[in-house]
Image 1 (cartoon, rainbow, N blue to C red):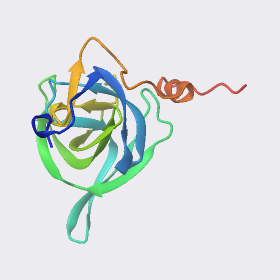
Image 2 (spheres, rainbow, N blue to C red; image 1 turned 120 degrees about the vertical axis):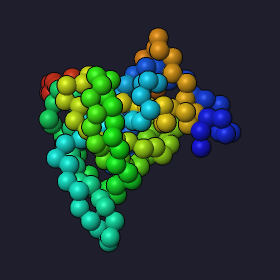
Image 3 (tube, rainbow, N blue to C red; image 1 turned 90 degrees about the horizontal axis):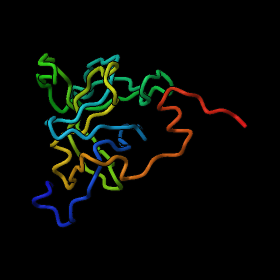
Image 4 (tube, rainbow, N blue to C red; image 1 turned 135 degrees about the vertical axis):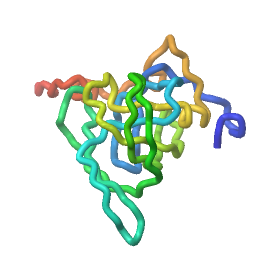
Length: 165
């Protein structure tokens, strides 16, 4: 349901927030909320399409931490669609699209997410307009309005191991 039909008032989010993808077993992961992007995108690699009970599925891996290959998450889910996506640099790419839950600021929505390599990007997840229109307003001057995860999680996201006491 989009914000125009929602019974709840919109939640104000910052331009970057910590999100979870509970159905994929991913989170928390730092995400950029991008009103210029239509569809959300997730850093995924080792993508392999296969068939299960006559339905197309995709198997892939996720590195949830920026600048780190630690704690990879392995996922299998049905292919919702395939789309040609034009990146901000103008390049086009065919991508798998999966339908999954996204938890942002304590609210869980179902949204489409494209799978792509985001190694060189500052964020492993991009949350686009299709997700944001389901009850979120973005304040471009603020960050992490939903709070931050524990320090050990933030250190891992920066590529640093937790120092034992």
